[in-house]
Length: 274
Ligand code: HPA
View 1: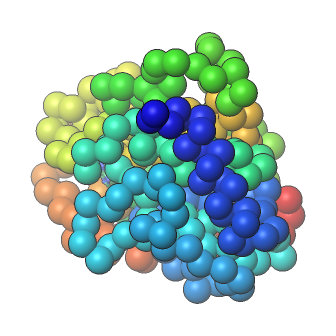
View 2: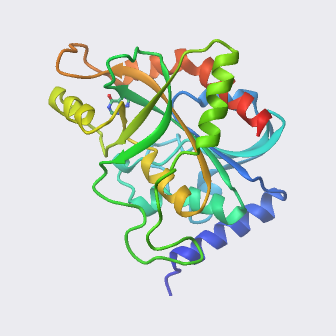
């Protein structure tokens, strides 16, 4: 008989526990902009996604990603190097499967990062934005379908989807280090198209400051799981009807790399203080 989602999660968590031994309470999803953080991790164990039972199979040849276990900022953490995007064709349950596995392993705090396009007129390319809230414009929700009470409640609140305590900590660190740190609402879309000028304008009107193609599914599941979440976006391009620059994947990558030291420094310092 086909295993249930819950059985798959528990099987994968058991495999990881057996393979890794000690498991952490802090998880990190390294999106664009935090890739550099890996070089700061004192790695004790790495698991390629393709070796982990039930993990989604990568769509990009030779680019599967891995789970990294080790120490960062004096804390034992697990990090996902590479995430699963909805636009790649994964369904919401697949996109968020690793977060469920983190939950089963005992993770209670999740850090997420991404690249995003800025709609807020005060933003500049290369800015780092602390995510204070999000708007789900994906055509689906990862909690749709059967609810497992073992995983969380049927109708979870999303009133503090991003931990106020962690946002405050980030602000304190930015102030002490004289770093420009923006705040904003992240709009999550399925992509893979970047927005039309009218769409950027629309997202601004509904209350968005930045838009990207990830994060919202993982954060919904992390909240369902009762985790504290901290999210950051690197603003890699700007959109709106008076903005003529065309966002490209290359430009996004370049801007993200430039902002890496700020993102990395912030997360490391936060881990030290947690
Ligand atoms: N739109 C959507 N996703 C993005 C963007 C954008 O402008 N920039 C980086 N990821």
